[in-house]
Length: 132
Image (cartoon, rainbow, N blue to C red):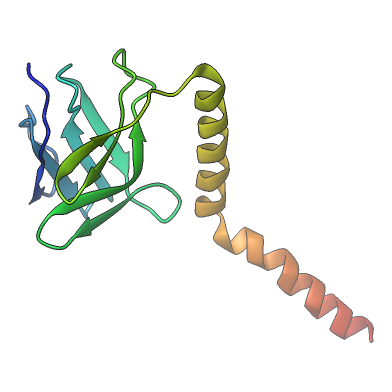
C-alpha cells in the first residue's frame, strides 16, 4: 500500500469493511472517526470524538485535531490531518508516549465524569451556607 497525502470526508453510521485509503469516515451515531493510516501500513485508525479526545473540523476540507500518534501500531506514525492534507510529525519516543497516554487517561476521566467534578464544589458551597 502507498502513503496517503490527502483525505476526504464521508459521513456514515458505521464503518465500512474494508475502509478506503484517503477517506476519513465520521460516525456521529458512535462519536468516532476512522481512517486507514496514511503511512501505507494499511492499518485502521479509529479516534473517539469528544472534547477530551478528538474533534473534526469540516469547512469543505476535513481536519482532525489534535495529532494522531499511532503509538499502538507497528508503524508508530504521528501526524495531523489539516484541511485534508497529512502533516507529518516526528514519531514519539517512549517517554513522550507515556506522558501522552497518561494525559489521555486524565482527559478521558475528566470527560467521563463532569458532574462528579462539579458536585463536590456544589456540596461544599451548600454546606458552608447551611453551617452559617
